[in-house]
Length: 168
Image (cartoon, rainbow, N blue to C red; front, side, top):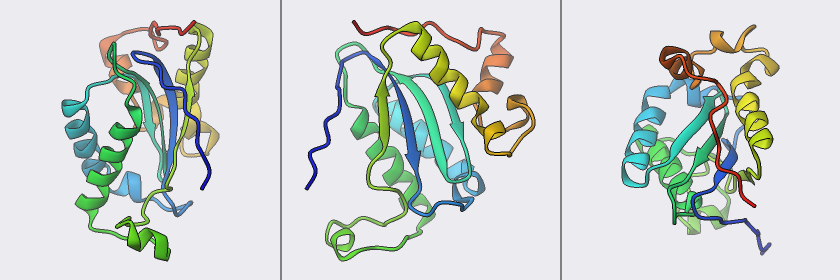
């Protein structure tokens, strides 16, 4: 089994990409209410500062800053994915290994994360989140995509590139 090495820095900012197992579907946007509730419950238990987030039909991008002293982003994604899966009641294609581990097969087993090391990296990560619907042809402008924190930022009239904690 591969040994995945993740940089776990308490209180750091990370850029994440999390995919459904089946690419090309629309489950996340079709069931956005269930995903929002799964997120709400997860961050109520284990808070994050969500610097940016976008939900596309089959994947999510997020920039999260963890609380000081906390580096457990994996548990947060595990809870969010599990809650969403449970709420939908859906199952994907399951290998014997997945059945043995009681995995529903709805999500890819792993996710991609990147430790944000400086403010410029943070700005690029936030920009990627907000502009991804345009890159995928889902909207002509970032503001046209309904499942993005860009709307929160516009409502609050805040700068779309929040100050991110850099890691030395």
